[in-house]
Image 1 (cartoon, one colour):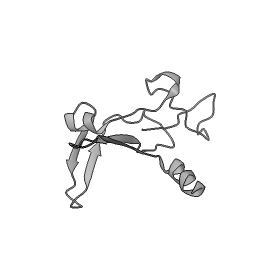
Image 2 (image 1 turned 180 degrees about the vertical axis):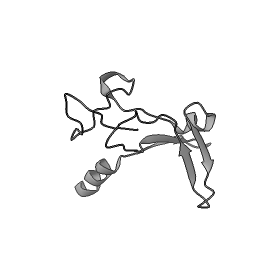
Image 3 (image 1 turned 90 degrees about the vertical axis):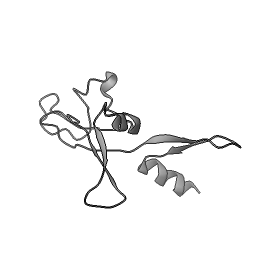
Image 4 (image 1 turned 45 degrees about the vertical axis):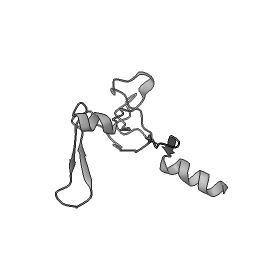
Length: 104
C-alpha cells in the first residue's frame, strides 16, 4: 500500500492520510502486488546491488507531486501448496501484529 496526504480544504499538510488523487474510489491508497512488480506492469523488482539477499522495488509515479506523509506499508497473503495440504497465511500490518501479540 502506498498511502499519502495532499492539500485538502486549504490545509497544506493534513494530519492524516487522505490519498486524494490516487485514482481509487473512497480515497483508498494505491496498491502494488509482487506479481505485478515481477511482471513489470506496476514497476520493477530487482536484486539489490548494495545488499546481497535483498530486493529493490521501483514504482514510478507512486505518489503525486506535492504529496506529504508518503508511506509504504506491506500487507499480503501467500499460499504454499504441498502434496499434503495447501496452507494460506496472512501477513498482518505491524500495528495489528502488535495488538495480536498483546492479547496473547
